[in-house]
Image 1 (tube, protein in one colour):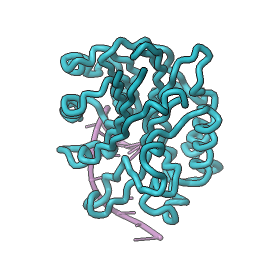
Image 2 (cartoon, chains in turn purple, yellow; image 1 turned 90 degrees about the horizontal axis):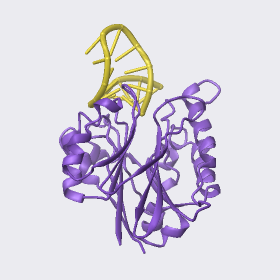
Image 3 (cartoon, chains in turn brown, orange; image 1 turned 90 degrees about the vertical axis):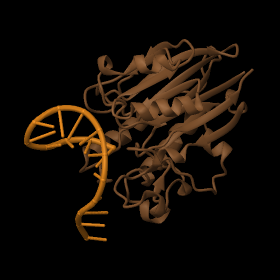
Image 4 (tube, chains in turn orange, yellow; image 1 turned 30 degrees about the vertical axis):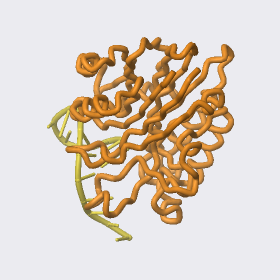
Length: 268
DNA sequence: ATGGTAGGACGCCTA
């Protein structure tokens, strides 16, 4: 039973609805997890996605900022919209779905970016980011009922040296500081999560999912970072067939600064 | 060392 899940920080789902429609038509994943939807639930373009076969939607939106949504061709059950660090920001939604005779628990995350100053003592946004990933420690891959788990999203951290264009130059840049990369890796390992992008693509190889809007020419400078991730529990990691980074999407008309990442499984 | 661009909502915050 094939199963395909994609994740994409869309940077306004309403502005970029035509891009999402193009992506869904071209790649038709079973599930698409969006981040930075930037709209309240009432304004989410659910009908447009239903028309493309994505009739099952779990949304956790807010006005203007953040916001996550999980779109599916298959029935979804909403499990939780979790707040972190005692803040009601829309940064997480979890759902379950039945596929290939098994239950999948899907976590869709948008981790705080953390601001520019990489010092938690003087930058409360960086403090919040570190606290957020520490609190993610209790999101576990293994479930008591034997369900498999997938965790995707914009984690706003590039953990490996090969996840950035220059390891040396980015060590003091928020997204690649040791406090963040070590915190995220500790959380991933403690939670029992497998980094599926790195299971499929050797860690020696540079891979990026985000290129800044501020470059004159994103392709020419190619100063990317791997900020978007697809993780799973060990019990379905062995069913992974392929990971695809849709780099082309960065060159589409009025693009997001992030591109979609797709994981394909053969379940059951 | 600095500033560069983009979105939401309409002055300025966030990325």
